[in-house]
Image (cartoon, rainbow, N blue to C red; front, side):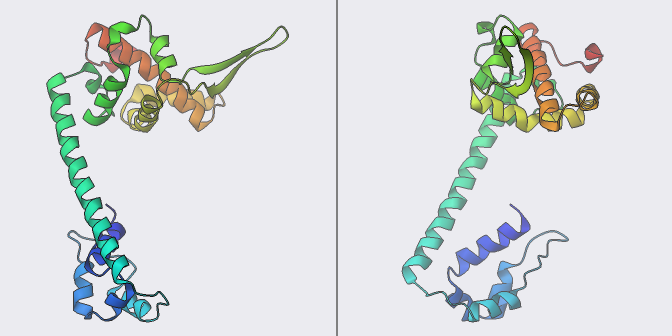
Length: 224
C-alpha cells in the first residue's frame, strides 16, 4: 500500500515487460504514476523508467507478460477478499463486545485474534496458564548448584497468539501510561527492549484474564 507499491503495481498491470514500456507513449506511462493525495511523488520518474526500459537487456516474452498480469490480478483479488474478511471480523467483534477491546491499543482484529486463540476463558484457572499457553513464560533453569531465571521465553503453545501479542504490545505501551511506565521500569533495571516487551506482554495477559473472568471494562486507575 506504499506509494511505490501502488505505482509499481500499476506499471506491472499496464505493461508487464520492459519492451512494452519502451514502446509506449510517455503520457500513458505517466498515468501509472498518478496517485491521489499530496506529497505522493516518488523519486522514479516516467521519463527515467522509459529510458531504462529502452536499455534493458531482458528478453521479452508474451507468456511472461500474461503471467505477470494474471499474478497482479490475483493479488488484487486476494486484497479485496482480505478487506471483506476484515470487515466481517470487525462486525463480529462489535457484536461480541469483549471487555478486552476497552484496553487502548487493542483493535477489533487483534482482539478477535486473541479471543479465538484463547478459546473459552473458563478453561483456565489462573493467569499463568494463558501465559504458558501463549509461550511467553520465562525459561527457568535449575540444578543442585545453579538456579537462574533467564529472560528468554519458552515459545511453546500458540505461535499465532504470541505473534499477535508482540504485534500489539507496542501500541498498548504507547497508548497506556501504566504500561509505558512499566516498560520504562524494566528498561531502567537493565532489561533489553525485547525482554521489557515480554514483561509487558505477561502483564497484558494477566489483565486480559481478569477482564474476561469478571467481564469488567479496563480501568487504568486500578493498575496504579
